[in-house]
Image 1 (cartoon, one colour):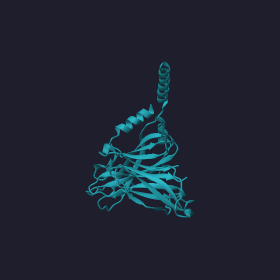
Image 2 (image 1 turned 45 degrees about the horizontal axis):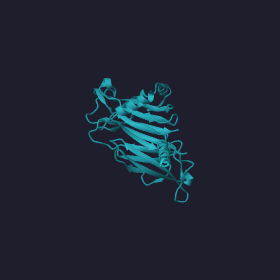
Image 3 (image 1 turned 135 degrees about the vertical axis):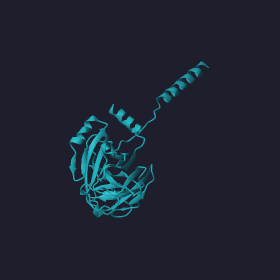
Image 4 (image 1 turned 90 degrees about the vertical axis):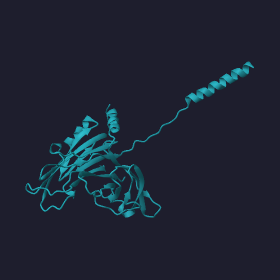
Length: 167
Length: 125
């Protein structure tokens, strides 16, 4: 009888130790990817009759785009501010477009290098996304009509292009 | 610390819309059709204001390359994803460098906001 009790105790100990040693694996893969997020759609303010501007001092709202980069040196970002309206009333005079793209915020202080290393041409700005994390780009766009000519009444919209190209 | 900051920002951003196109480096493998290679891509639409995306195949200098796909322009509902197969012929493989997805913006009457177009390009390995 005692032998049976000892055997049962040993068996249960082995079973308990086996249960305690069981592991549950969690597997995951981090793959390189770029996510473009439109944080804020822009709005044109109308500080005077002949200007439309996304500048907050002009009553506008700057479009803000976030790029999430999982691995460094895998992508570069290309952001273009508008150089034409995608929707507007009929315009019989020329529109002068100006704009800028700047790094607004970032998840890593060293991402300030994106701003100093950016390349600008025409209405496009390129950033080398050499550091993983999130970065926010603020876009400014201004449209001036003719020579101080009043914009016709109506709805105006323009498109900001945000691209993420794998390197 | 910076990851905690990133997580807090991601959680706090509850009114944001995004576009994902993976993998970053797709591989072309032989398809069931002779002389035709295929890359399998996945598109995720988290942009509420966008319903259509266009798939393109581009060369090194961003010029369009002929390709085949069941979904060259695809309708994708908010918060849904779709697997896209891109078929490229053997003679175009050397020229094809990027597979891109671009959000398509529909003109909406009464809209005053500036609209953001997003484009993500994966590089063919």
